[in-house]
Image (cartoon, rainbow, N blue to C red; front, side):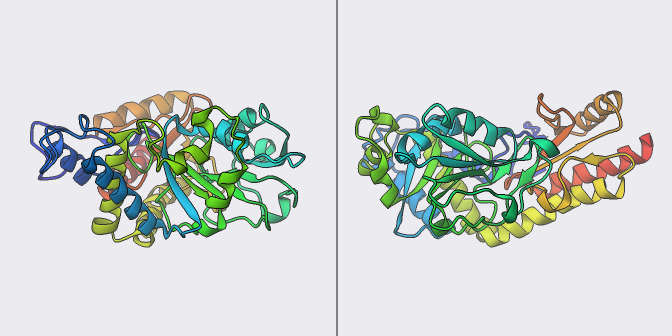
Length: 370
C-alpha cells in the first residue's frame, strides 16, 4: 500500500467511523519521534505540559489550525477533553440566557443526543426534526422554525450514522450558530466568522481520541456563570490558554501534525474538499448505478462526503458482503448497530486507493450477486 511501510506490517483499508484512519505520513512521524522528540530527549508522552517544548507544540498546532480555517481574531481556539458528549452539556451551561431558549436542529442520532443533554440545563425548542423521514435528508432553510430571540441554534454538520451532511451554512440572523463538526472538521473550508461556536472531537477526522477542539467567539465567553464547576466554564480554559488543567498533550501534538499534513501535503482545505468529493462520488456512483441492489440511505442532495451509508437486499447478502470485503482488507464497513446496513467512512485520511478498491469490490459484488 505504501513503500515506506515495512513489509512486516500489513495495513488494511480501515473504514471505521471512529476512532478512524490517520494519515500515513502522520503515523510515520509519530513513530520516528515516539522515543524522543528531536532536541528534547524525551517522548511527547513524557514531557510537561508547562515545558517550553510542549508550549511550542501547542502554539504551532493552534497556528496551523488558525491558518487552515482562517480563524478570525474574534474567535478563540480551545483544546479540551471529554469529547462531544461533554460539549452537549457545556454548551447550554455556558450559552443559555435567562428567558431565551435554544433552538436545536435534529438531523440524526448525534443531534438528538445533544438535545437530550441540553434539556437538562434549560429550555430547548426543536427547530426541525427529521424523524418523519428517518433522517435521510437535511431541512431546507424555509423549514427551520428558528426563534430570533433564541440563545443559540445548534446543529450537527455531519451525521455519521445516517450519512447526511450540511455542506452549506444556515441563516440564523443575529442568533449565534453552534455546530458539532466532530466528524467533518477540516473536510472543507469553513467560514468560522459565521459561527458562534464550533466543536469537534478529533478521533474521526482530525487526530486521535482524547482532544476536543472548541472554536468560540470571544464575546460568548462572558455568558458563562462563574458559579459553574471550574472545568465546565469556557472562560477558564480561554484565560489559561487551554492549560487550566493538564491538557491531552499527545492528542494535541497529533492534531498539529494532521494540520501540517493538510497544509503541506494536501494543499489546504479547498483541495481537501475536492478530493473528498471525488472519493465519495466513486462510491455513490456505484450505489446509483446499481439501484436494484444497493439502496442509499441519504437523499442525493443531503449525502455526506464522510460517511457513505447504504443497504443490500437482505441480511444474508450483507453478511456475505462484509466477509468478502474483509478478505480484500476492506474493514469496518458494518453500519451502526442502531440502523444496520453498510457504512463506509471515508474521512480525509482515507487514501484514494482505498476508496477505489472498495468501489471496484462493490461493483463486482453486485454483478456476482444480483
